[in-house]
Length: 267
Image 1: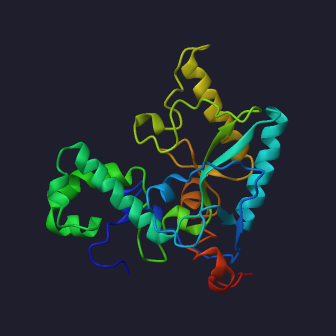
Image 2: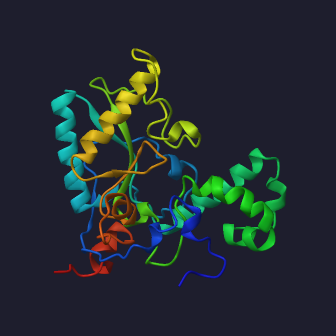
């Protein structure tokens, strides 16, 4: 059961998303190899997110294998280009921290942050300032997965099956995508530049976004409908977007004890 006052996942990207069953295959988290450049310093670590002694640079083994195949496919089309990782595995505590940080940012943008002075979580806002909660929550959960403690409804990154990524060219420079990762505006939509005139900078942005999507989709990844940078393979988002009957990755704990805490593989 969801804890009292916990926001429902229906406030996020789709009302049925969190209802898809999970049968975890038991794959461990593995470190992301240096083949994939990483954004440094990691933005959420720099923001004070509580990773403890752990690192965000982990993915489930099957997801990592698919990502390596996607990198090979990218090399065939754009020699020297690489898939660059912005974020990957994210423990529930970090998800909760970043969601609350976004609530505060949205309230500050509206000049209402003082109304959150006595609150320390979205659930507190929902209970104490329900009108303000109804104003802020859709904007926050448009991009951030609910930090739901229910293991049947994990946020995508806590499964080790989701990653935020972009492209770097053969010189190690970011490829122009029409906006940064975590650009919480309408430009985040994958096809925001789809109608751009041929030959324009905006058309180039669209082409680069579609290239990233193609090389990952060829290996089974699906894209978040509202974020050009977010891809999943095997979690509930993947199941919803691909039509699978169930997800194969649920929430997983820190890499150091992932092997002992993940459910046993299923037949």
